[in-house]
Length: 126
Image (cartoon, rainbow, N blue to C red; front, side):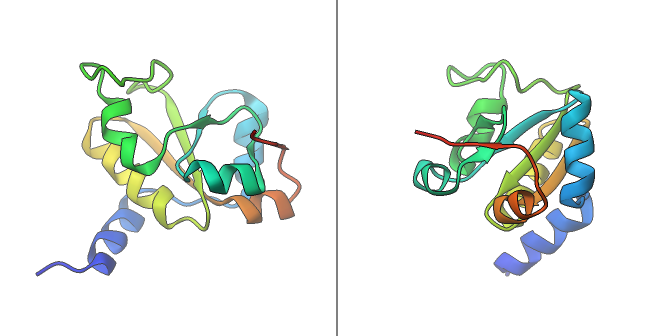
């Protein structure tokens, strides 16, 4: 029987995790789509990465599938997708899901608090 840690270990082995500083370089280049997979309450409490799209973890599969009525057009398989969450766990799991769905470049940016502490651009969510 698989445990949650097994899923997390697999996700972490497949989805590269980068430092907030490297994430800020990618963000500044404008060459990636940033998504925040936390729930709305968390976004309202801490804000999100400037310009990031909100795709709750529970909606990743539906949002990424072009045949789904819930598809988000910014999620296209050739884009570099950078994912943030509270601490990096949900970002890794969401990243693995995207890789399983055929996305070619997915990066775990880690947690929002680390991003903000490193001086990453952020914005409030209302």
